[in-house]
Image 1 (cartoon, rainbow, N blue to C red):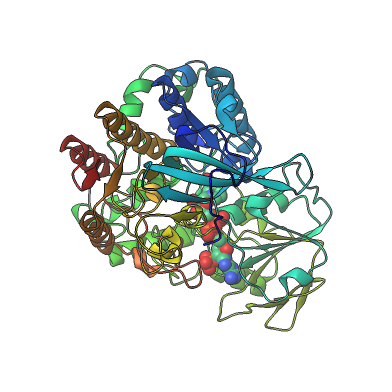
Image 2 (cartoon, rainbow, N blue to C red):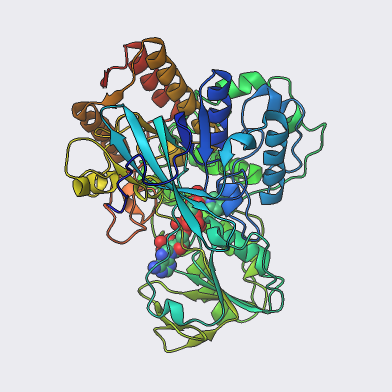
Length: 566
Ligand code: N01
């Protein structure tokens, strides 16, 4: 553990808190607001310089949300009553404006310590408090100082993608041009027009940046390992009179979104594929395709993710739609491109790895300046980075002015395990969450973990996270935590910790639910398999938001069953 031993006089101590929240995105802001209303002393620490969390960090060109509004917003009446969205799927700029609106309405910033990165925390068993250590940026460029704060409770609202992943490409540091990971893109932007650019990775970030850069750069080379089964977004401008900006029924919508499978105000299709004829199946797929969005997966037949033959049929539907979009003059390249972007046989089942929404991603490859390089193991993988660019196995050195690493995140767990939490009982080096979760994540209700009392996390592992609309989950888990802490306070209790047996049971439940689907058949951050050496296991609760909410409520109602309170 790298955490210093925080003796009371070992560094600047900030005033103690009832609750320290880490992260000023949707989840953190919601809890700060509610805890303040209840009279708690609460603050957010955030390493960025403004509100927004993921929408602060992801400053790359084209960053946009894949969830439709108004599903994708906080449910507080102060916020929605006089806010109108401009696009069905808002881009980063509009989302940043939303967070400015949040600030105007709630005045959150006065309780946020920006530029403050939480690096560790030690549990003080005598006081029932966390002693939290953070690095605070000073006025001087690149300089930080250490600060400590005592907090009775710590709530990690760091989201699922707080820790960027950069593969250990040989020679990465040799490259002389510009090189950024998508989530560390300069806040002031970068002008790449007229430049030669390489993009490594074709997840949601890669797809969006390709769409944005394809027509402005001199040359764009896209390095794809696995094709993204991207779906049509069908973006739309919306005005004030649009149904999406209609405030009537909004309250009911917020209630409803907590009862559905994915945290959206629409639910799954009610039929399995065997209940309909092949031609009705096809017309349902066409209908979903024309509506656009992730509904293509959410409202597909109920057995999409468990029935391989159906999945193959849906894949073939997707593949043929994508292939229709490819029109390049050179016949050989055209056939190759179609096969790489939308292979004859599925590389993995559709819908078990996060699909992206695209607007003109496939059309980009019809432009003469946009080229695809397949870095699949069977084609021409990256050998190394050089001072000029990227060398692939066929001996070609691709030269660039700039390289974008759209290579994803140590998702779901990374934001939590990168903090040196030192819990109870064991010697220091064995007591961190990182150490505890090395051979498998163990949480109770996807919000707490044994050995780490008074620590909560939202939008993390073993909760509906990746399968749930962000603001919905941030709020419903936030509410559970708020109710829990209020319960403790009102009973003069100061400590809560889950039982080992309860978390083992929860873990088993998460594994069992996931094993009903085809999730393990793709390499993806859903399973931790995108990070070399990370334990491959289901990291999300696949039982749906509605069921998750019910279970959490029931545990609370039974006097916090599975926890020890003192
Ligand atoms: O990351 P990813 P992301 N060599 O992990 C490739 C959300 N998000 O930042 O598929 C070569 O999805 C990797 O290849 P492969 C959204 O939930 C949302 O794009 O593993 N390539 C893959 O192509 C999303 O799912 C929005 O074979 C390597 C890519 O890098 C999540 O964030 C926008 C490699 C990583 O894709 C993460 O998306 C942006 C290697 N060693 C993000 N390692 C919206 O709402 C990795 N890759 C729209």
